[in-house]
Image 1 (tube, rainbow, N blue to C red):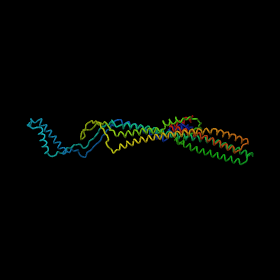
Image 2: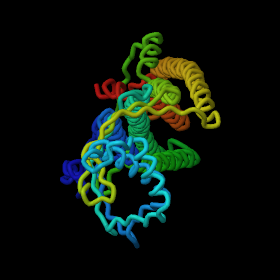
Image 3: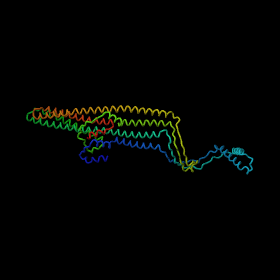
Image 4: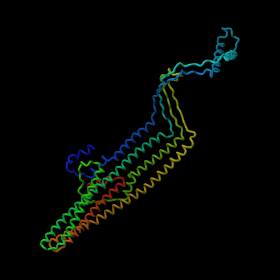
Length: 476
């Protein structure tokens, strides 16, 4: 905003700087809050797209914790007594088999030694619980997970994020096109009123001059006094029309300033006039351009991509998820049960049943694709209608403007003749007034037709997605 206002600082103290249509559009692009909002959304989608790339990379986590136990862990030996007896019997049989001759038990078999030891151990009372003397310990592990196969979910999610980013770009372009169309329309309104005020001022000055001439003629007793009353009424009407146009100008300038979002301290003025230009329009070319560049169609194309990827994501839920994992355990010697240093493996997971939720979501995503297809067909028809209507309106406004050219020239010549006739004393005052009003009416209608012609062209170019194209024509 600072760089935009600086060029205007030398014009703040009562001076005005003429601002072209392209400069006004640049101000609107830089200052408009709606454009800023959608620009931030584009930046948001850029980072979301980058985040989607992270799904292809391994996930590495450092896990740590502290645990305090109110009492030491005890191993319930009563639930392990039979296993311990069996273990003691196996050790006894192995000992007799290895050292039986040395201790005088050479005739005892391993099976007999085993059964005897198990029988003896079974007569002893239950073992006391084993206590692990450690009430607090710290855990730490470095874990990593790398997806190997997800049924296309990760790829679909990345394409979905890319489509969202492109949709945000298109929405920003759509907002800019709307702002451009609004700016052009309001700029042309100010230019039109500026020209209309000029015409009204000319007519008002002419009426004043005619009233003065009528007053002199009455003083010379050339004209009756009632003629002056008609001239005075004409002056009052002309002044009223002029003031009305000036009030409209203030409102139009306020609207233009609002679109550009510049402070009241910045003074500017628009172009004095816009010349007519005969613009060649080819409907088929315009329609093809609209099909290729209209933001609405581009946005639906991205919605189509998003619907397709949403369907792919739902389809991936019927495929197994395969991932490699690994972990490195730290402080393992301090744990009650010592885990290994490294753990690596591959794990697969597939859902068997979840109440038909995935099947119904898959069907819903298919209907979403069909909905987008129907929306695209409808939007194509509406774009065709929009281009056709604006094209027809532009041609009609062109014919209307050209039809006023001869009318204005004739009205101007008629006014000149009636003024000369009145000045020479062979014409009537009422003829001069009527000629002035006729010229004013035809000239204002011509200016309105010219304004309607350029606005129709602007709407047509907005319909095909190129609203700034009309600026080059007007600027020339």
